[in-house]
Length: 588
Image (cartoon, rainbow, N blue to C red; front, side, top):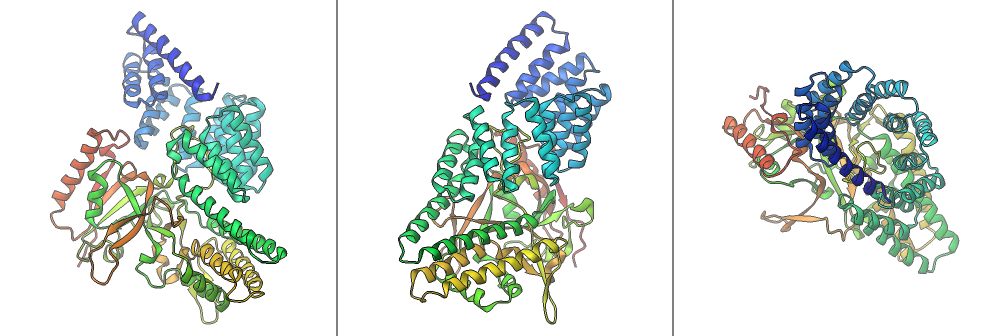
């Protein structure tokens, strides 16, 4: 029996007991609390809230009811109210283990992991043999990159409960991060053995197989994950990438190339991919909210329909002609640049970008929520009029991948929509340097990357320009570097502290869409992909530019449309939590 089947049976029993308790004594808060908890487990959050509130009405000192209501506020995205309710529960019962644990998970999701650790420490102190608390603290340690402490907690979890399925998945992710492939595979296998319907474990095992080049097994696992949970439908692109790799490998194996050169090419390409991955890891952003300056018509689209997603455009549509070229200036090697350009001539660009600015980063030290230079540069209307657009402030949770079947606190590896800090390069008289704080990690990685690229080019030079092997290497260089070159910009723009989503999509992906273009001398289609998540539930603020005409009407209209979406069924949107604000910038 899978974990979710057991859960359903337990819920049915809980409902029966709760209904019976309420019928016996309708003035006893316990029955309402028990039923509210069952409703919560069934994702019927409004009914859970009603029962928790009824329990509090009957007993104002019911710490358990405050904890339940806090968890509903978390689901609604009402974080301030949730924190108040958690505190109330703990104040009423300072030994309430589940309240400390639930608040710890809450703080972990808010990326306030130090606070989360404090709560988990208290929970462990009160209940030292509880497996799920160690699992959750392990996740918080993982998010803090405290891998050794995370591993200790995951191991402790499994000492206490050798069948704790989620921890096998989480520890598998940690082993994979540490490069321990065999140990990661063993943990994923165990998770699936314990629960054959655990979609996230199949997904992560597929990622592992993809990383080691076992593309057939990767496809099989991705397909299984999708069949169990439609939230993993994005893996269809991973499947196509795997199929692309299989076809490349088949052609490669059939080519008339020395076997030792084939082996060398594969080795160098794997090393290059690992270095690129390490650069992306070093550039990961921890910003909590992002600012998206855009046209008012875009905000209109975001609020007027259900299931509206954000668009990421193909990299060729970037406004700055230097986009992607600064990286090659930094490499400062003509051979690498020529090989890239040659590959570009034969290969369609399949990199898609989303660009944002930090909002409320570093506790207010860096914020571009309402900034005059940004209104001039990005906040324009359809006619290019400055400061007449809007700024949509979005929670960074928007970029996380969510699976309907997974436990709230499960950590996931290989986040597809990863927010990355743009790397800024300053040009000096005789050299170039990276200005980011993490330059000590990025600079040596790029130096390694350059060395490996030159080794690959040296291998290419053993063949003639007309040879397929020669061309395959150039195509390979283009394809791999195009996934990272757009991470770099001139230090002239470092005041922006820009963050980006950079995603490679197979050319034959069904997820590539287009909009019609009616401008002269331009193709009739412009290509883009959509975000995984709907955007409205993650919008926190909408700023109207300082030069927006009739801003009161826009404010009223946007608020009305947001409320209409809730009436139409968007239960994860709370209109009162979305501020619509007129810019305070003085625009001359």
